Length: 162
Image (cartoon, rainbow, N blue to C red; front, side, top):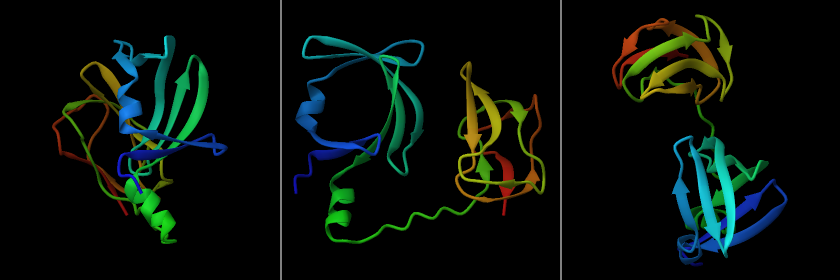
């Protein structure tokens, strides 16, 4: 098994492989509005990352306005699959801390509220961008340590979960 190959599944339908060398052949330019201009084989593409779950290696992207669900498997993911081992990725809810300094624009939950993985908890503005902080697992809101309009520091506890 080649450590430089990635298996990519698109829309739970088609699979293909890319090597690191093939990836280097793409010409990526990040634009100011968060989109990317990509050149490959003299063709131009405009891509935008809509949603990213780095832990699960799943992404929703738009290429030239068309949405795609992407799953990426690296060498280790492929090895685990080949050996027939299942990686149990159950994530329990954990406390939410500020990933960067910023300003809380809004809190979307209340104490005692049940939340599911991926639910938006609050909006944090940092570097003139709005970032929705989401629940990493299912749980219940135990305490909220911030409020709308409050400036927070990196690592500051914002929401306690149980």
